[in-house]
Amino acid sequence: MKIKLELFGASRDFSDKDHLEIEIEDKASVDDLRNEIIKYIDKNFKGNEAFNKIVKSSAFSSENNEITVSYTHLRAH
Image (cartoon, rainbow, N blue to C red; front, top):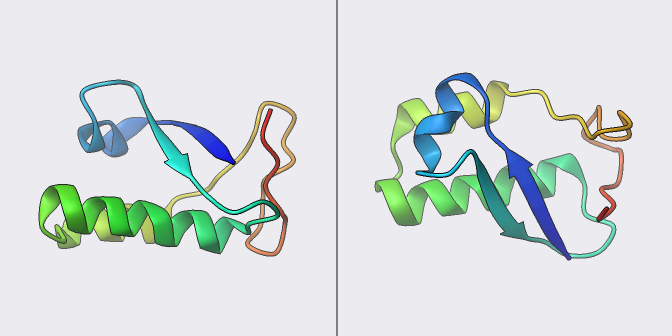
């Protein structure tokens, strides 16, 4: 499934847009999403450690607050 990840604060440096589109498996966890974002950073920013730190410390949520902790499964909207 494709996730549209809106970027806020320092994470806006990850893209020229205000979001990233990330492809992840159905029933993926927030940790799975985090790993995909880190792969994106490794590929596009040569593993920028500051960016990786931002991802590792970021909180995630959805429009209806379904995504809050790492064991919650993501759903496409």
